[in-house]
Image (cartoon, rainbow, N blue to C red; front, side, top):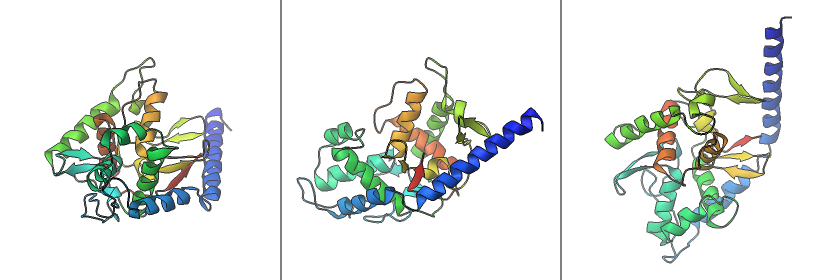
Length: 257
């Protein structure tokens, strides 16, 4: 067997092993606990206004969560901007419950405690309501189209100490780093891959990661300064990847190594 075939066989065997490992873990995915907590928080009356989030409009009407995740980020007329799921939830916490916006944005990166952990749980609950549905982000509003183009430029922007970009890892077919497959996110990578797999539970650090956290960590690995939570750059990247994932099936909440 040639060296090339040997390497390909080894990679295939490793990939199959990881897939089997994830399948075994999926039966007891701890993400279910976050989903349950999120549902409780969604229905719980909180904040100065003593209100729940059950009238939160995520793009499909007040209180409708099924199918909302697979159409986000999108433009919202009441704010005049494109928002992803997490920033839209914060908007609802502010407008419906009377919570402080600055405090929520400050807490958001602290995903393991306080309001940061609460946001992760609610995000997981809402996203899970669209499990099995297909991504179909709207591109009818000029701001949605503009954010797609911005996201595309950010995806291919090379910078930092290592001259990396998102495309360095996710711009070609059959990419790989160590034992990790690197899907091509410049097009539809397939069902439950890339954008269609987050929020996900990370077994390696026992944390639930949302897309905002996933993107921030990608920036860290590129040796970039981490963007602020809910920044235009991360939302634009979400639009770019989400539009590219059109027709992909959501498997959220997923489980990762």
